[in-house]
Length: 190
Image 1 (cartoon, rainbow, N blue to C red):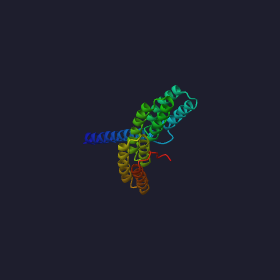
Image 2: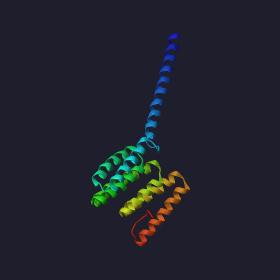
Image 3: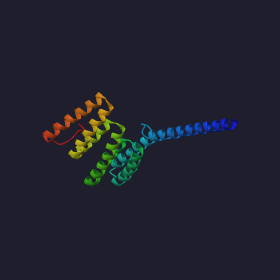
Image 4: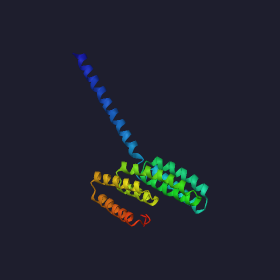
């Protein structure tokens, strides 16, 4: 009888330790998952600092240094796991390409950065992020991707159940439709 009680106590202790260990693993995984997504983290600050180096090199008309700094900015933005960095990286490379005379290649590279930003913004549930990416594709003249971004933005806004987000998507959609009907240059940054 005493052996049965001892075995039951031992089993309870093992289960308790296993439960605590499992909870600790889940907590560490959750912290790791969200650590770099918070604004102000080292990863968020790193791409911003690198971006300043790109701007400084462009201000000095040093395209080679700007491109090297852009590569560091790109790596830091990827590490940040946030959409803002990828939009900034795409914008920066378009500027580097314009300064260096490789406009078309820079637009292609920027497009990849913007697509990464789109997936990240959707994953974060950021209507603002999705719409910012849509603006960039509008600037590139990629109508099909803008239309896809609008669909993604509506989905994200509906999931958020945020009337302001839905209003933002509606306003963007109306501006987009007006531009496509008028066939004017697509410039959403005004």
